[in-house]
Length: 112
Image (cartoon, rainbow, N blue to C red; front, side, top):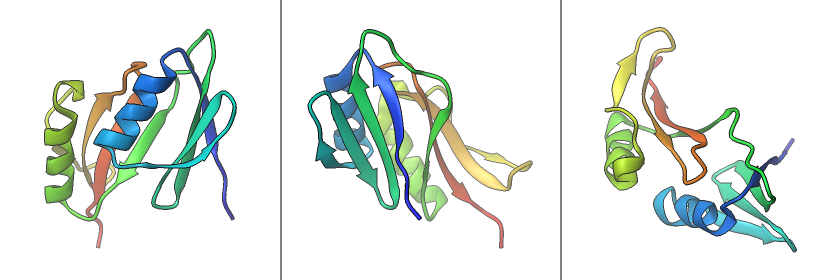
């Protein structure tokens, strides 16, 4: 099974650049006013509009704390916090903002 989550964006080019250059997503498909990106099995798209959908969270999952820490370094000032353990969900995580102030999470699961 597969799917795509789409978001309206006022800053199409900046958002696509953030996810391709910082997160290492790849462009899966270009459409007339939408770009569909892919990161591993996760597909998500941004469509140029006169408003921005910034509800929800795009979560990127990594294999280790070290990989999450490396992403924290890559997102730089977009990070809202330091990476930390979240014992409620047994994850190691941090949150950042994309260029549209969309909520982006970088995490690793620590369950056995």
